[in-house]
Image (cartoon, rainbow, N blue to C red; front, side, top):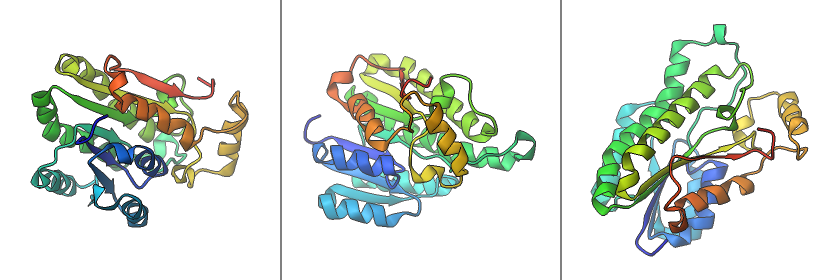
Length: 244
């Protein structure tokens, strides 16, 4: 990566987002750091990197809020050529017959609609420059038989997987790569609403005897953003410790 590149991280206040920016921030002239409510994490990143970090608050369940984020980036004149999309609702166990369409819609709005709007806004600039890197955060649940009681979350991730595959095929000849990473259960605040027993069982079932860490996930994203990954597109990299 060379000077002058611009990175947009959606969900930058997550553990993965903050760790990615801390590791790769010096390689960018501007990092647009989206958050919904965890402003403190973005403030810490600004303390570390200064004005290179541009905070962007938006609630992706609201299309108007998403559009305002896009317009703020447009008005800056700094169009991202690297985009990492991380947002998802918190994991929760819920039997399908207890879910609602509103629940599915909120999950899809947050994870899918937001990145559709963002990419429709900024992919034309990447096409013009014949260069771009796009990475989605998925889940190892799309790699094999998923667990029960996660239908809303898993449906949204399969939707993102389909979008990733489609865009990779459409834009490969334009110098733009579109890929994903799919970690197994990862020790983050995303799991805070899950019973401890589920997290413990996941660790027990993993051949490594533990769950995945943020530090094991970020390097895969970093690689997919690098110039060395130019021939890698349409791929979903599993970070599973061998469980799937």
